[in-house]
Structure formats: structure tokens, C-alpha cells
Length: 168
Image (tube, rainbow, N blue to C red; front, side, top):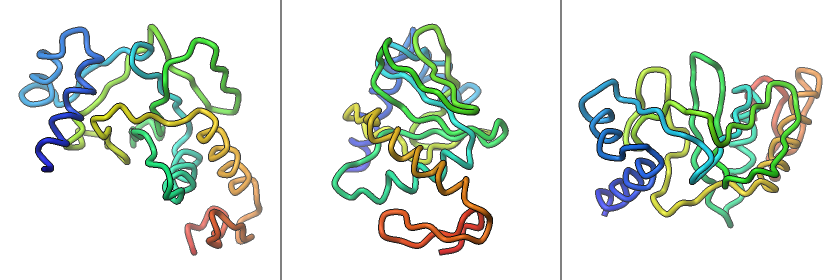
């Protein structure tokens, strides 16, 4: 069962490559990463990792919807959310980058981390992506948490979170 799911996620992700076979070869025998172009099957919203990790927490607690893929680049301290492609999307905020057509993203295979790249939520193989509206709401909630003074409490999805400390 898991092998089928992993294979679907590999095929789905590799489909974004110029040469899907070469992409899979790079994952298995090359550098372990492949450069994939955004804008065809998905776009990526890249945010600073503290904001992104808090937003993932907000998204993950919505049990009615499975979140889309999330990729973290630990060296760059960025978190990337995979969204449907859309030329009309505008994202505004400090450190927020919207990567669409013409942008290339280094991506490890969905079944393992490579170097500084790790999947927080790997692709599911069914093409599940983040809803822009849900992601925007999660980022706003995460921004509110970050804006609170250290030690103050906030409620995220019914759970008490202490700003910037990671305590619950």
C-alpha cells in the first residue's frame, strides 16, 4: 500500500520536470535533488521558516482537510507551500515570495530528505495543493502569534500557544 502511494507521489512530482525520467534518476543516483519549474502544475509560496512552521501548525489542526505539500529549506530558513498555479495571485508581506512560471525550485524526492531540503508534508500523489484562502488565513493567524510579545498566550485551533517559545 505505501509503495503505491509513494510511487504516485514520485510520478506526480516528477511530472513537473522537463524530463521526468532524468528527474527520477537525479533523485535516485545523482545529487538527490532535481530542479523543477513552478507555474505549470503548482506554484510555491516561500515564507520565512518561523512564520511557515507556525502556519503549518494551524493548517495541520484542520482535520477536515489534508494540507498540500510543504517543503523546508533549513539552510535558507524558508518554508515553501505548494499552491495551484495562478497568474492573478498576489501575496504581500515581509519576506514572502510567490514563485510561479519561470521560477525553478530544488526538490528532493517525496520519500526522503536531501541535504538542507526536507518535506514537512510530502506530496500525496493525488495532486492535493494548498487552498490560497486557507493558506492566507493560516499565515495571518501565524503572523498574529509572532506579533505578540514573548511569553504572552494565544489560542490556535483551541490550543494555547505561547508566542515564540514553542510551549503549549
